[in-house]
Length: 132
Image 1 (cartoon, rainbow, N blue to C red):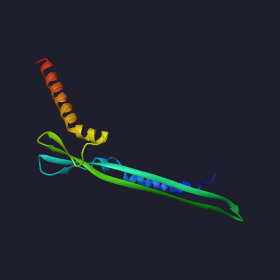
Image 2 (image 1 turned 90 degrees about the vertical axis):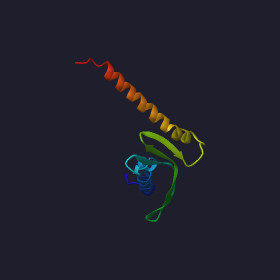
Image 3 (image 1 turned 180 degrees about the horizontal axis):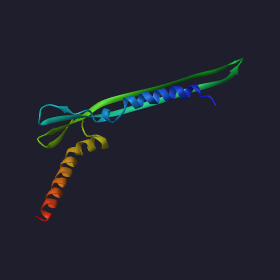
Image 4 (image 1 turned 30 degrees about the vertical axis):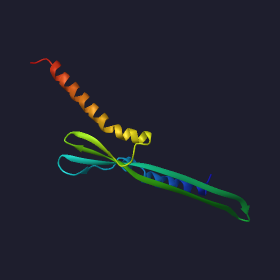
């Protein structure tokens, strides 16, 4: 069975959305300010997608078709993670209004807790190891 023209339109639109929206769009590439400081941008990505079509019964020898697709993407910077001297802090550009904003605000605390837990486990493992 031949592919319907709307399938091709939708396929191209979805491929373009995949190109625009990936993890590097949300968590940006690290920016090394100096030897001790790194800044990582965090963005909110929203997108919409629509498609439509029409198929009219064949007249004479030609099949009639009309269709279209469209998409919109919005990338909004919401915060920066600043890593300096082994500490992580968040610099938010917007007030905490959604669950995502609250999660971004909690990231530095989570990173600090995980780092402390790993250091504690390493220290316990070193003290528990029998000396030769």
